[in-house]
Length: 320
Image 1 (cartoon, helix red, strand yellow):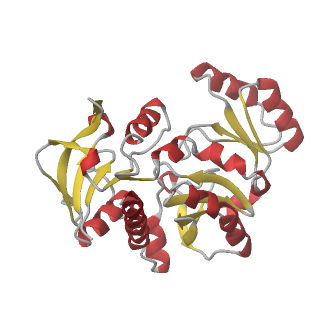
Image 2 (cartoon, one colour):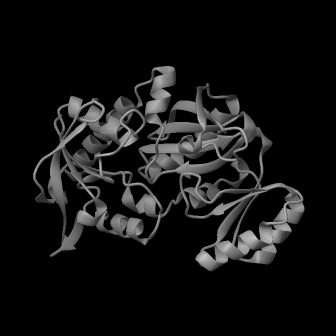
């Protein structure tokens, strides 16, 4: 099977090839004989009923400083390629949402990974609320009084933007901290969006697990230990990845959410688990596959492409 694959992502020039999940997926696709195109989300257009992109042929190699060759830009009709990987980084803003609407015109004739309709309906910190029994106590609101009451009840809380990413804007409000009211004012002045508040889970000091699910099945895990004096475990703010194994509770969480992910066309998903609680379901542009592969030897890029090829074959069969 040789497929034409268009990768919608951010500029590829300055990525960290030892950490970037999209690079690993591109390299695996190339090794399988698939042809690659690269385009930026701003190069996407809908005109005359066709979804087109100014894309560049792409060749990748695992060579630091010389990891990608891009050909001359050419306008391609995305209905004419086999797979589109929607891999630009969040934030989950109107530009991101618009891209899902445009790609919805070609899916599933062109297989978009992950399903653009499902991505639009499943922002990380909202999709997870469909599984309240798996979550720590959580509040989503723009009402200052509700946030203050939540803090009064749980004392030690986390407050973060509802549509943020990468740990940006995450605040740990400890008992006795006098900054919550000012923090609420800052959030409400910057945006009309609600914020999310959660009970602080002390287990985060032992790590925030990133579990990769492929087509609804758990495929690998790492644990991310926060740096000393840091409430966030994201690796780009100093979180330290360590080898880990799935616990019975981790498997229970994956079993509970897996069928919904599979049904909604979420082939590549990364979930965050602190202690016994699910905190996020990352579907927009999940990361972590290189770190997991490095620590446990599992080739997650190959597993993801196995699932993509399988899903592509199924969609072609149904169309026939």
